[in-house]
Length: 610
Image 1 (cartoon, rainbow, N blue to C red):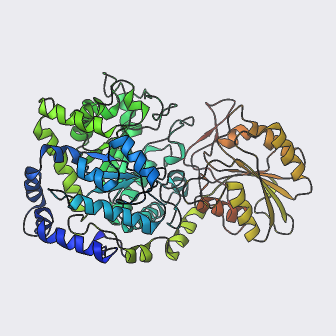
Image 2 (image 1 turned 120 degrees about the vertical axis):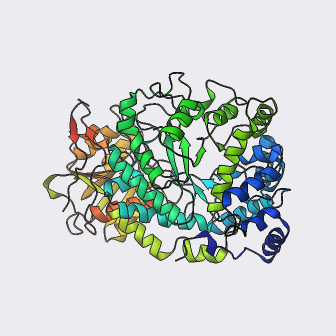
Image 3 (image 1 turned 45 degrees about the vertical axis):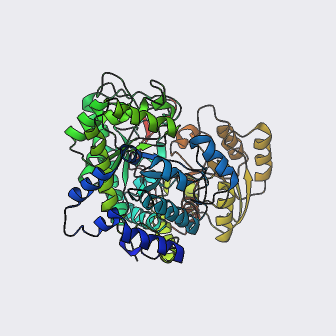
């Protein structure tokens, strides 16, 4: 299996090959790339920086979104969106005008239809980068955490997300999952992944991290983070641990507000720092900042993204990190509340950031940084320090030598049988059995032939084949049961609850998919009234494992945690429920009692088996 970028030399077309050949023979940047064995990379890249104009240097600092499935021929709707946001029509024009150092892919920006299309987009962007006066390849990135956050879906392999892997407890599995994911991203020309999450989820009410974290134990999270860093970077892409200095203990979502973390400096060192220290020790290529206030680390109460005491004082100086620092999205409310969109990128650079990710208004941000340099607010040495870090990463990833993706590599790597089988094996070891009264599970095809599947059907992350109730029912049917699906929603109405109760009559068992059940959620009523019919009820938590605390006393007979509603995790949970696999997961977070959160209902490490 080919994991490294140096194998990705075959281009998508003869035209692409001709363009690349021309670039390699005529541009000093590419020619310099071939001298890496004779000349230290840093010196070579410093000379490249010295040839850049100020506009080119500033451009290297930005990683921005762009609409469209093609770098040169997007659909008209995407052309219109690009014109509205940046005054250019295409990704290629964006690179030519702003000299951006990176592009981030989003599903909603129509960047990620299928692997061959993604590779074509990546190659078009790279051709645009190499066609500049100072040719420089781009860092193409995305958020492919897996689990509930994935931008690239089927037919790519979707592996279990962080908390599921935390439940599995295997560093080897975490590393393997990242290696598979990294190899597939690299094949499509995506070379920087904003994963793994290094936040320690010590707050069950955390609305933004939750199952995106490996768990609540700092040392356990640190081990998982290090394993995934090695997996991703061993596959030839840059990993990114996030969100520094730690977003795990908050009840607010930094997409919509500016959270404050009240940890003392000592608590930060004990709870939040270990995973980032482990990532740095593992050779992490990039670290993403958090739009959070941590008064113990910066009394000025600026968001960490804009805090020199946090990014330079703690991350650079105390932790000794000299890699690339990337902001979290600058379009998020958490970083925009205190300062305007023209000040945020300037303050981020002064704080110690290198890459400015997804500004809400690229022209405003780009011109603001240019002005700050021309006015002397940001020194040229500060800009060149960040540009050099970014170029060193591009060089490490082989982008100056081999910037293009190949269809052959995609067909050898993306969604291949061995990867899919490994994802299934890993997922089975993450499914966690929390309750099993009267040994209801595993279900028997004789005693429990007719199954009703009801529950929440949240919007599906990339890579799912349908709503969770449909996927679960289909998987049960595939294993010899007769299963029917009825979507009752995250907030089931009285009519839906009555419909589910009526549908349960005559069934042998009901499986209820639950989703972040709160104290006032009508999901509790649904489970209670289904259990009151006398038909055995199995609950399947398809996101946070804390649901069982709110469902205690409803009469459920068995409860399973899947940590996500992606196909790979739902189908693994079904194999466990049906006895085709043993539950291997142990809780990586404590489940506290709903009526008395000071008491633990199920501790870290809890998990039944059979």
